[in-house]
Image (tube, rainbow, N blue to C red; front, side, top):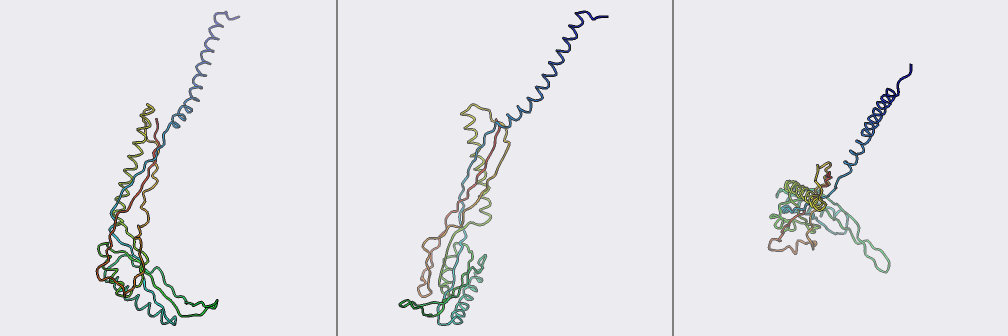
Length: 247
């Protein structure tokens, strides 16, 4: 028994519709990931920066004792005696982070017509410490009177608590700057701002302590009668934040 032409045509049409629908669903299944990937690639990356200033209230000092003499033992004992006096003074003033940063003993020579002659020895002992800036001037003068003969460096820093608070403020400023940049770009291109898909905190840091310029070695014999003026300033804290925003 043979099927009529109308029945054959109906079956063929059903098979064709099924094939077309299947092909459409398959195409959609493959297209969705592509569309999703394209959507993920449609992002804007901006980096914002923030800068805040914090008052420096701590003075960081490096000072020491140096001496010269005919014998190594003589010089070393003199440096030890004066160093103990200076350290005792610093401890009595309750300075912070007191530590020895350098000890040196070396021979000294005289050169005459290419001939080297030993003339004696030189020694030094260097310590570092921190103290509240308003107290630094008087302490430096008293340290020279106690036996310190050199000031190798004076720099100014803020307290750890003040720096931490300023770092947070700089990060907030950096984040707001990044968002403002993104808003400006989207507005100029008439694009709709989407979600933030990535946040990268590049860091908030304070530079090294600001040194006091023109610090020279001091001798007890030329210690000033009036307290040495020591005035701090401000310390800069920088931060940056990178945002990746979809559109």
